[in-house]
Image 1 (spheres, helix red, strand yellow):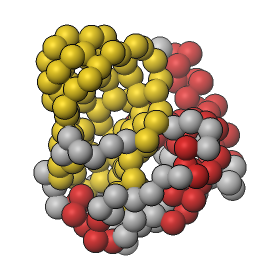
Image 2 (image 1 turned 60 degrees about the vertical axis):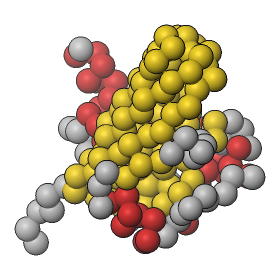
Image 3 (image 1 turned 90 degrees about the vertical axis):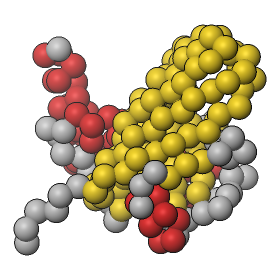
Length: 183
């Protein structure tokens, strides 16, 4: 545990000292460090993703989503909503799947909000994406042809595991704003 914290602190120091990264995590916040690590991994996988970070009204990052199932399955993850390079709120993803599936995996998920309207809709809470919404698997060059659909663009970056599936699923999200410090 001590080694993990040391590695996270070193990682955070590198991120904080780099002017190339707009979102600078609090080095004492494990969730913020996880979000920063997921962002770095996504940008390493596809440097073209930078345009979504630059042009969106905000974005949600779920650094680790765990997914599994045998016939009926589900996924769950916790993350942060980032607006103007600051933590705007916390968010939770829940998914239930039905269909042929076997296995488990972990991945990171990113939701980019094209404009203030899409961001505000997410912030209202109980935001849902139906089975027809699709995420783009992050690979080199995946961002080149990716577009927003109904104001959002969704990307996933597989971290590990193996999952066979042909399922119908929807994702539900909860949002909670962070308390702002008195100015």
